[in-house]
Amino acid sequence: MNNSMTSIVVRTPGGPEVLELAEGPIPEPGPRQVLVRVEASSLNPIDLSARAGRLIAAGLMPPMPRFGLGWDVAGHVDATGPGATRFRVGDPVVGLRDLLFAGGAHAGYVVLDEQALAPAPVSVPLTDAATLPLNALTADRALDLAGLEPGSTLLVTGASGGVGGFALQLAALRGLRTIALARPHDAGRVRALGADEVVTSSDDLGPVVRGIVPGGVDAVIDAAILGITAHQALRGGGVFVALVAPFAPPPIRGTRVVVQEVLADGNRLAELAGYVDDGVLTLRVAHTLPLERSREAHELLEKGGVGGRIVLTP
Image 1 (cartoon, rainbow, N blue to C red):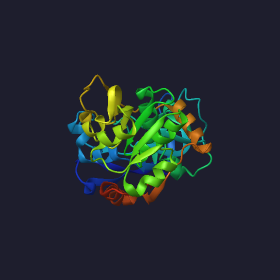
Image 2 (tube, rainbow, N blue to C red):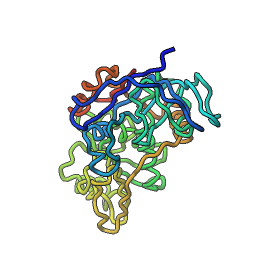
Image 3 (cartoon, rainbow, N blue to C red):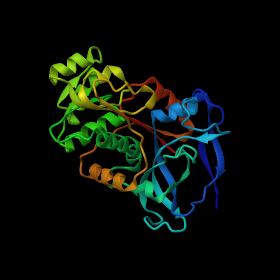
Image 4 (cartoon, rainbow, N blue to C red):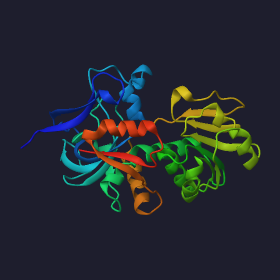
């Protein structure tokens, strides 16, 4: 039996050239943990930040001699640790690794707490399911933090991206009126995702949005990290949800600025997976590449304009 696996590791932060395909032992699950044989793991902007050393510089990761990448995982349960009862060997699962010091999901196997996992949606391949956990949980929690009642107005920046797209679909489910900021060529797509109005330029964003919603929107989810530019569209006393702490604007005009910090929540992830099977949430994969082509994957994501998620497979 082969007890080794390959994984992507970083020893010295930098550009895509620092990514290494390394061999190492398959990890063992501890109490209430699950060993997942990875079938697919998506690539996210936070992986680029970790690789480049920005998370270490921001104090979000401790300096380490080497670290792995990959938050999203889709695969099959390979083994369970003591006290782990939620899943059986062979079950298809999706999950989120939210501990930056733990082994990454861009690997053949990954160990996660059982509470970080959910049954995979049955209506899509695991390569598609791998795009769900991080972005959908982020969008869902951002909406919770916004705390809007049905009929309220919401501006979503970066609406054609992973988080923004899920935010639009989940907002429609909650009965919210949404204004989406997206590139001109994505306008039709974001309307299909549920946007009531579409703005195609961040120039004069505040006045443009206020022309649509007099007085400003009730909340903003700033998936594009525009900061104060997006805040100008917010009404006094509204809620601004930032996804990256250093770029959160100050709470002016009585607004409340909150920073969304994603966490692994298997129970909520199971509900979101159900939304995929119900057709409420749609998944979009642009490229599927093997781990051996991780450098190419990072270059593609950094270039931008991919038009969907990039998924890595062992």
